[in-house]
Amino acid sequence: MAELIQLGQPPIDVTLKHSARARRLSLRVSGVDGRVSLTLPRRASRREAQAFLLSKEDWIRKHLDRQPDATIIAPGATIPVEGHPRLIAETKTRSVKLMADHILIPPGADKSGARVRAFLKTMARDRLVDASERYAERLGRPFGKISIRDTRSRWGSCTSEGNLMYSWRLILAPVQVLNYVAAHEVAHLAEMNHSAAFWHEVSQLMPDYEAPRKWLRTHGGGLHHYQF
Image (cartoon, rainbow, N blue to C red):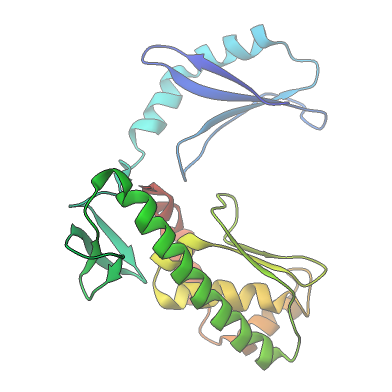
């Protein structure tokens, strides 16, 4: 069971996790959201963990200082949608509207983040369902259910039952990036692995997949810096 402790001043939250497979203390600062975690061997004590973290405090703070500042979604903020920056602006409207360079939202800054998030999740589902159906038809294999989540460790997944899961934050990325993730997960309907045969299926579904794959590796973490 994970335990949360604090390190230094100003305090840094650190999640402690004991693992039967761990042979040594393993420290990680997430490049996605800056979360700090320490994995411990099963018999390691809390005192050992605290001493280790104290010795690594400067290292941790340097890594956190390099983290990009989060963008709070509110009027005046800019957020990409399908890779294109849009300025969030309040106006007399009853619902969120996507414009060429703006996202228009109803008055009420305290609800703006939730409104924009709900709009983007719906938009992401529509785009991902369309892309999944298109690639599944091309592959000649049906999929099961599609779920949309806010995952941090993966952009998509495919279960052995053929159910697909995607991160809704893909709607923030360029269109071809969203399409690549859909092609990637649909290809798992034929190959539940990452073998040469799997990548052949991906290339058949999306011949130019290398560029969006590289974009996601390079810039994907930044999609989590928007706080709603």
